[in-house]
Image (cartoon, rainbow, N blue to C red; front, side, top):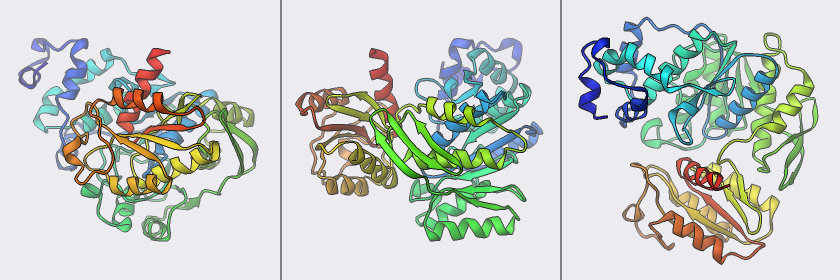
Amino acid sequence: MTKEACNALPNKEEKMIKESDVLAYLESKAKPQYSRTQFDAFLNEVNFKFNRAAIHITGTNGKGSVAYFLNETLINGGYKVGRFVSPSLKTPNEMITINNSEITNAVFLKYIQRYDELFVKYELTYFEIISFIALTYFKEKRVDIAIIEVGMGGTIDATNIFTPILSIITNVTLEHTDFLGKTIEEIATHKAGIIKPKVPVLLGPMNEAAFTTIANVAITKQAFLYGVKTPTNIRVSLEGICFDALHYKNICLSMPASYEATNAALALSALEIISTKFPVERDVVFSSFKGVKVPARFSIIQAKPLVIVDGAHNPAAMSALINSVKLLSKGAIKVVFAAFKDKDVKQEFDLLALANASVVVTTFDHHRARKEEHYPNLTYPFVSDYHQAIKETIGQAKEDEVILITGSLHFALQVYNEFTKEE
């Protein structure tokens, strides 16, 4: 469906958009815009209000995992739970779920037909439309609680349009510097934008500069500050990890990445904070955490040689990925790497060099993906077809070596989807 066709819709009776056009309609709204001026004007015109209990999650890394842990546990605890996460694996429907059932194209179509003229009038972006639809859907379906993951930053993110019962900031490192700022303090200020007056805030581990920046915002807004306690007694195997956190002993995950212990500890702390309103039995917590699997987050797709798909897309995530791999295997590391144009690949390459990893760089089908010309002075081989790069890397690897497919969450999700489709 063309943009002109989307815009030439004078009234509901004349609209020709069908359920099969929903994806094309949404994709036609994709544009690199990071501002709240138009979106706020739209929200004001529709008199938007969100009155459901919700948890709002931001952070450089880990926010998706925390959302998955909370979502699964609260559902199994008997609650009706809305979840909004990004990006999607295959379709935007996956971003919006109620008790793990994806929003349908029919529901998308209903909201598009209702609001299209205003979407066009205010030139809303893909993510603004998706965020608005998610929260409106959760409100109309009267979920007990919603788990909302920020798209980028916090202050002017399209999800930052409601007051939660808990705000979570997983961590803060340099990312999206073109939009969020060049320093940790500037980026932390953006993330602290989700803090609301007198609403508790839960923080993951972060450096002093980020903590001080966020703490100052929390104090100003009289928001009580909680800090996550570091998980202990972490044991790692190919089957998963087990650890102790809070008053939970020997809680286990099916994901073998050691960094997931901290994400899980954050989710456990969040459950404790909201437990007076949303209590969950201990055995439900244990079984729910064990059942969570997050796509393209340290996903093992082959055992010999060990092939791991992970969406590490910034230096902090790459460091955590390498450390997790070293706990699992002493074998040499081979990497198939693809990234977006706005990412700090130099630091990621430096980390891979320190790990003595051999690297093949590639690209993938996305308008933001780096191509060969976007890698000045590249010292690693570049293979334009990532299928070929992966096939050759796996084919040349020894049984005790580890292949990492990483560099971008979108790339990792694309590869993960292709591998799991073959199973």
